[in-house]
Length: 89
Figure 1 (cartoon, rainbow, N blue to C red):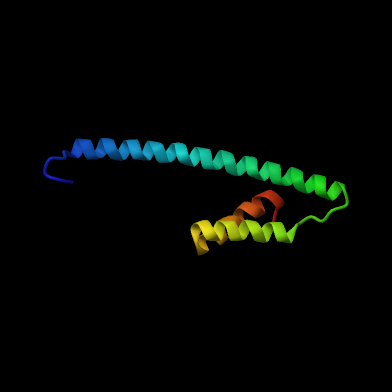
Figure 2 (cartoon, rainbow, N blue to C red):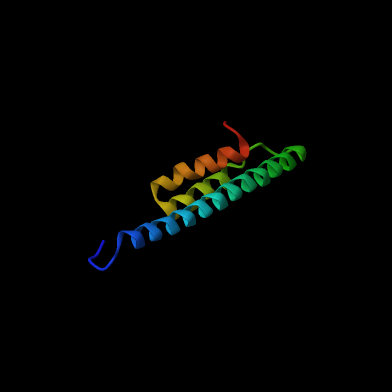
């Protein structure tokens, strides 16, 4: 806090930012759930047509995309996202 910034202004700024975070979290959760639904549907269609439950090349590409964007933590995030769509192995 600078000499010209009152505690009220800082609190207002923090509240606004926290409200924005809440909105972002809601959107992330909505997207997560939608992605899982789409992934499950793809798996059902693939298996109904004689395909495999998993397409490892596709999963590797997704893991690499998240790693490239987010570093090593991206791999963990991608694994959780993949599991949400296909279930545990």
